Length: 143
Image (tube, rainbow, N blue to C red; front, side, top):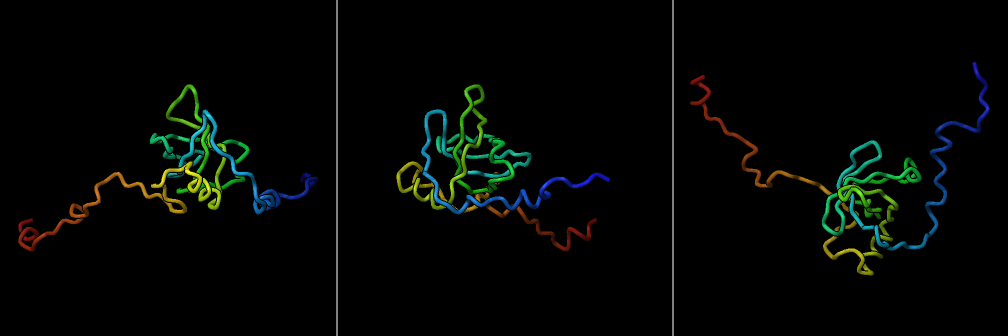
């Protein structure tokens, strides 16, 4: 059996998120970047996000953020756009809730953007009348 020569296992690596509490400088978008809100997580380090310019993009979490910054539906993120693929992008930064409120106050995000809320994407109509089918006793007796 090999000897353990390291300083610990994956729990030690998991608990190394110490720099999360301190304030950081608010980064604004540059050319080639866009603000977006996460619609849903897809797995494998990817998510679907609705950009502020109105385009829904498939985004990839960069390696520096992978397993260190947790991204959920409804989060405001900064995306690096790709020159060769318009419908895909790379997540550069996740904004904390107070940073997202500041972006909205500065006018970077449109007024209709809902912050701190999970986005529910429902492609079906919300009528609800088609969900239930009522059977009468006469119909059952005929079978």
